[in-house]
Amino acid sequence: MNQALFLDRDGVINEDREDYVKSWEEFRFIPGVRSALKKLRKAKIPVVLITNQSVIGRGMITENELSVIHEGMGKAVQKAGGLFQKIYYCPHHPRDRCRCRKPRIGLLKKAAQELDLDLTKCVLVGDTLKDIQTGNRAGCRTILVQSGQGKASLIKIISGKTRIKPDWVCDNLPEAVPLILEFFRKA
Ligand SMILES: [Mg+2]
Ligand SMILES: [Zn+2]
Picture 1 (cartoon, rainbow, N blue to C red):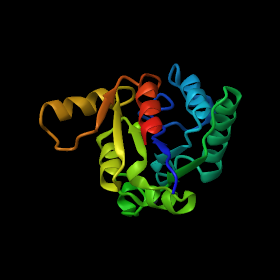
Picture 2: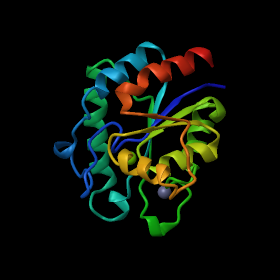
Picture 3: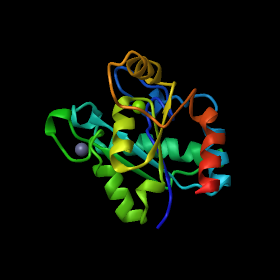
Picture 4: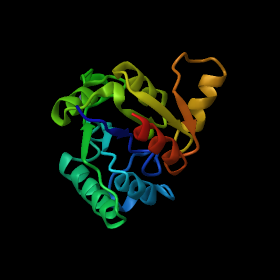
C-alpha cells in the first residue's frame, strides 16, 4: 500500500473566490505553491487533489469547463516541476447529499481504492474545518493552512466553536513543506 499527500484546491493551491473560480482566467496560484509542488515531486511524494466543486452542481460552470481549468493548472504545475498524480472532485450541490462532498470521505475512499493507499499513512492539507474533518474521519494526519479560509477556521478552533482539530497548523502550503517532507521521510 502507498502513501499520498491530499491537497484541497481553493485556498490551498489557488486564491479562493467568493463567487467561485469559473475559468482559467480567474485562477490565481497562491505565491510559492508551484515551487512547493516541485519540492514535493522531487521527494517523490504523490500529490492528489481532493476538491469540492459545487460550482458545477450550482450550474455556474460545466464539467468540461472545470476540466479546462484543471488542464491549465496541471500544465502550469508541470512546467514548474510539480505534478498532480490525480484530481478528484465532487461536482454536486450541497443539497444533493452525495457521498463525495467533503466532509464526507467518498473521494478519499475512491482514491485509496484506485491508488492502493493506506489512508492512515496519508496527510491531508486544507483551509477549512470541512477539510480537516474529512481527513480526521478517514484516519489521515491533517494540516490546517492559514491561506484561503484558514484564518477563520483557526479562530473557530481557538474560540472553542468547534471540536474539530488538525494535527498541525501552518501558514500556507509552502510553509508546510518541511513538515510534510519530515513526515514522509519517517513513515
Ligand atoms: Mg479550500
Ligand atoms: Zn459529491
